[in-house]
Image (cartoon, rainbow, N blue to C red; front, top):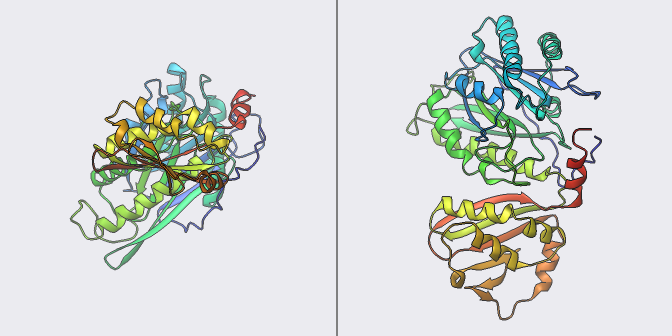
Length: 408
């Protein structure tokens, strides 16, 4: 499938090398395409790891095994296969994952539990063990590559490479964070709906790293949606090599903990938004700010109800300021709301306040705003202090075109 670059694409950033991380790619040829489709990321001994995984109950063996491996707290390698999700493939799928883990573990002289495997692509086709074996062997012997090449390699229907970078000071030590991500369709987070990998040279204890990622996830990866569908394979991993040399961060009270957490959240937010910007068929990037809810979680659920609404998304695609569709979505969310306190606006202009249309509402500036690529929707529930921001995209015929031909 030859896809045009998303009009919402952003340039790939400059991501410096992360001490303790080496990236290589190879061609396993999981599909009939002329591109690298297997990524091997080697991690220094003692690297801490944390992860969040899909809650889809039909998840892949990669996810099931990955949860167990992340619980161990350390990792030495990550393998990412593109073109085959290896989900819904029974014992044959698990055998393929265990084969990869054993092969890489033998090469690195580590335990197989320290090798994390992810796969993305078509569901229901067992990962070919012969292609996986040859692909891994080629990757182990390949020359190291850059972050952008790795970001390209993990993609499927992605139209551009996605990466993010941040830095922070831990005492007198500068630490770096870099991340890559893939995701374009089947995006409706129930934790995180994509494959994302974030690396840092900071020293962070595994338990605290997991606490941070789980918390940050609720405000970033779990606040995006493209199409309302949660994948079977989704994984986001954070790996901290400790090579920066500062004292390990083990709690919020440790020096540098706040700075590191802020930088990690910045990278997670950037990566999450890039997935939406590459939403299948997307022409507009939509930010939905919900305030006045009874809690932050209630605000998030209301925002997702709006962001997942085909009626809202198609209205935005057509440049139609149909705020009645937003009212509908708020009402169906199953969260506390009061029609007579509800306010809705577009691009900084209120269309409805306190449950009724604004008396002197002028749709001209709203129409101008909706003609652009970056759309802002504001919703004030009027009941409390809860707030959240959701990011989504419009729904166009391009989404149908991509997904009708996905397996070809």
